[in-house]
Structure formats: structure tokens, C-alpha cells
Length: 464
Image (tube, rainbow, N blue to C red; front, side, top):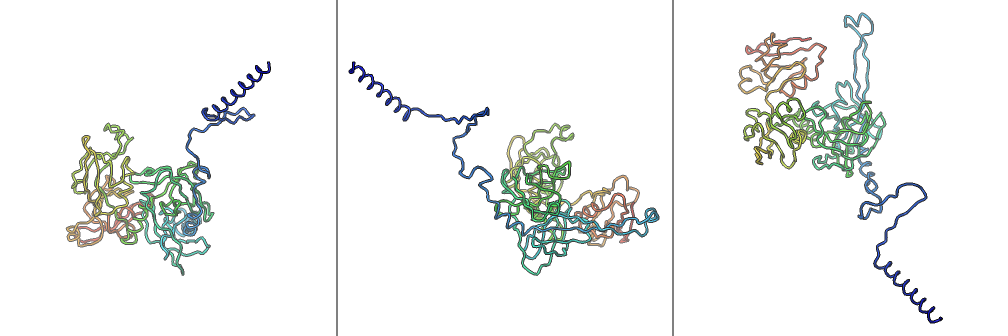
């Protein structure tokens, strides 16, 4: 009996050792932590080791970029004087009236140690006085050097008695979707405010065909306009410009002018006094429009060429109507803002390599960018062109632009073929200046234009 009991104990002990050995060395163990709540257990979906610091934002250090940026971002105050009627007599007859000061505010970025500041055109538009306050609370009077309403970029200058902290332009073409960024500015007059987010999209257009913005979800509010959008290295990759909102405050989307565009505009203003715009010379077609639907054009990955301007670079390079642009230099083109955003960083005389598709075949061409010779000015709708050497000799002038097209409303005034010299006393030297000056006039006020006929006689007309 004792012998049987001993054998049984040995067998049991051997079985325990065998089972333990199997469990320890051969069977894979799955653990699940079960709590006393009714919540569904949460299991990892990847076996990739996670960071000891956590994921994403915990691994990014914003402090250095923020510290360097806040000292280079300024508060811009725009004082505008408006004259309003002080009594009923003034209201009806327009005499007298009192001046009222209206103060607007925004942000700006110091880009040189000697006090050049980039901001938005809409921050300083129609200002009678500009003041800039630094992060150390010092205030300076600012001078407007130049502005470009089309890109919404303006350049200011202050005279400080010391070298100022500044930000260098980064390369916005290197910016990637999902990259962490900081927006620095003065929302609601709260100076030196830093918010963080990611680049949520690139090459966004907000209603205009030639716009190309960086989209971010960093919080941007009124007062942030003209401030800095920087990456975690502290590189200036954009100038905060706009938000989309039904309330006027931030709801998740903000837009910045890419630094490459802002840098080019600033350099043009400093060197030429205005923006030099190089063009391919194509008429693109915008998708998802009635015209595109009528032409049966949809679902195109690229930019469809609907027309070629004669004598421009695209024409000379052999591009044709129906070609689809797929790439320009090393920039992939999937939609129109990809193309216009890159071309906006170039000047007349620059050459770009265009990759396009024709009848299923991929082709390449070197295209010389040229300045547009004609355009239609805002509000009044005149078509104007730059003067040729022959025009300058015939009209005996070096200034002005030639009127080559007049809308039906103004055809009885004998404007066609004359040289337009000035608008409201402001001299015109190019079609770009004409576009800016006509864009600034009011549809409801008086506008005077000064012209020159072939006999060398000046004519002045007033429109209301």
C-alpha cells in the first residue's frame, strides 16, 4: 500500500514538473487586466514599442522656438482718421465735419536687425499713423515702405537705437503636413501670445485662383494677423493672415502666407518698389465650376490648360490647350494653388521646368516667365497694357499705361487708345500700379483720372 502511495506521489510530482515546464517554456501567455467596472477592455493594436515620454506632443520642445519668436513679433497699431458730419447741414452739403480716430491692431514680424517689419496689408490699410510696440513695451512710429494687396503683405520700417531681435525666413516648400508649428502674435491686444498646432494642409485658396496658403489648426484670432508662423526650429515659415469663422473668432482653421511668397514680395518692394510677378502665360480651368462641367472636365490630378497667351513663355515653349501640368521644377502639382503658389515666388526672367501630360504622354519644357502685358483693372474694368517703346515715343512720355479696352459703361468718353497717367492724383508707371490704385478707389465716391492723347494734351475726367 505504501508502495502504491509512493508511486502515486511521484507520478503527481512528475506531472506538475512537466506541466510547469510546458507553461514556462512553450506556451505564450496573454494577459488582460480586468477591473471591477463594466468598461470594455482596451488592448494595444500594435506591438511597436512606445516612447517612454509618451507620443507626439510630449516629444516636441516648443520652448526654444517660442522664446526666440516672441521677441521678434511686434504689436502694430493702425490709426485711421475718418471725417463724419457733425450736424444735419454737414450731412446734406458735405462741408465741415469732425475727424474721428479709429484704432485697429494686428501683429508684425521683425525680419532684419535694423528694423524692417513684415505684416499684412489689411493690418495697415488706409492708416494715417502707424505705431509698433516691441515685446519690451518700447513704442516706435513706423513708416510704410510698400504693400501688395494681392498677397496681403506689407513692409514697415522703424528706427531703433539698437540692433533688434529678428526672425529669418525659412523655406515653406519644405513644410510638411502634420508638422508641429507655433503661431505667435497679439490676439485681442494680448501681447506675446503663443499657440501650437500642426500644418493641416498646404496650397489652400480662399476664393481667389492665385492664392496659396498654409493651413494650420494653431489657434489664431483677431489681432494675430501679420504675426509669425514658425516651426519647432524657430524658422519663419508663414505670416498669419486669415481664419474661417462664422463668428469672427477661431474655430479650428487658420491660414498663413507661405514664407517663400512673403520673402519674395518683401525683396521686390525693397529692390523695385513694387511686386515683380512672373507668369507662365496660361489660362487654367478651375475644377468643380459650371464651365468645367460644361467642358466635361473633372477628376483631373493636375492643372488643365484651357488657353495659351500669345507671346508668353508657355506659348514659346510649345504648351498647348488641353495639356495637364503635373509638376513644376520639383513641386508636385495636383491643383491650381500648387502651381500659382510656386510661381508667385518667381520673377519675370526666371525659367522653370514644367512637366505636363499630353494624350497620355509625359513631356517636359523649359518655360521663361514673363510679366503680364495687359490686365483689367478693378472697379472700372478698363483693360490696360504697359507702354511699348513705340508708345512712349508717339505719346512723348515715359510714364503711364495705355487703355486698350473699355467696358460698355464708359465707351462714350473716348478713352480707348489713350495713355492713363494718374488716378486720383496718384501717378501710374505700370499695369500693376494701375491695378493697385483702381483697387483702392471707392465705388460710391468720386474718382478722377488723368490721360494723355496723341497730341500730347492732358485730359482729366471725374467719375462718380
